[in-house]
Amino acid sequence: MIDTDTIDIQKIKESKVKSMDFANLEFGKTFSDHMFIMEYKDGKWQEARILPYQNLSMSPSASVIHYGQSAFEGMKAFKNKDGRFGLFRPDKNIARMNKSAVRLCMPEVPEDLFMEALTRLVQMDNSWIPTEELSSLYIRPVLFAVDDFIGVRASETYRFLIFTSPVNAYYTKPVRVKIERHFTRAAKGGTGYAKAAGNYAGSLYPAKLANQEGYDQLLWTDSKEHKYIEESGTMNVMFVVDGKLLTPELGDTILDGVTRDSVIQLAKDWGIEVEERRIEVEEILTAMKEDRLEEAFGCGTAATIAHIATIADGDRVYELPAVEDRKLSNKLSKYFVDLKKFRVEDEHNWMIELN
Ligand SMILES: *Cc1c(COP(=O)(O)O)cnc(C)c1O
Image (cartoon, rainbow, N blue to C red):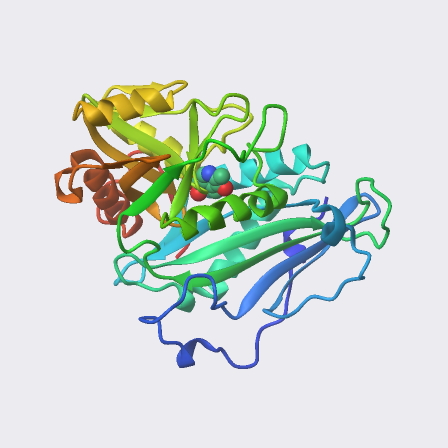
């Protein structure tokens, strides 16, 4: 293992931040000045560097291109108007990256080195963290195989990168979702619980079909019977029925979301009963018909809380209660912004301040 003093730093000659228009950002298209990069070879991580954000070079036979041995993470840095900035629960993302690495037969990234790289990179580029209420610096760690060999086997060399992208609010309006009864995102025994690149490739075609039918996103169901609700697009999903918060229980087909975990903790703190269990599509449809479904929302780092406006199952289309009337999801949204802008007491020590 390499020690954390050995991160080589090469600064950009002139920051691009001055020419930025933070009010008009398209999600995921703008990148900050620097990136972290390191190489895995001869059985160990080495050459840890922070460099100006730039293109990579690799062989046409690099195994990641052919067999998708790759996993990523998604997290955010926040900054308030007073200039205080920090990360939200980075320890969870670091642990999850390593769970994904194990599943995809890749080497884990030492936790302290990962945290050191994140800290240095975000500190160096902190002028890129927008301070607007719903804005943040999205952080993308990614780990992938780079052997120049086209046989199917685990690579012996890997690259680990972290780069960042300033972003504004993700969804501006509540989403329309369609229950997916044919295609599958994740099967038992598969890679659904990992942030494996291939999971997202496989979800694009079904998502495109849903878009063509006028939906923003899918509500994925289990691979065997297409009867139980699993996730919503690339978010975990939550329902409020009869005052209780319901969400599918974790398993190998469901991503263990940091936002999901935080929502469950907050709901419990606020005295709301939480049930993590299998949820049948029929149970939710029945609750909708009987006006007992009070709220439905997706939760994930990109959107934080995404209200669901419409749920469709085949020809049956249901409209949910007005967003203004949704007590829990609105309270959660407000709490998360307040916490990330350092305006409320951080009872769970979720914010890691980097000033
Ligand atoms: C990343 C992701 C989530 C949300 O996880 P967070 O840690 O809250 O960002 C949920 N589902 C899938 C499939 C994901 O890829």
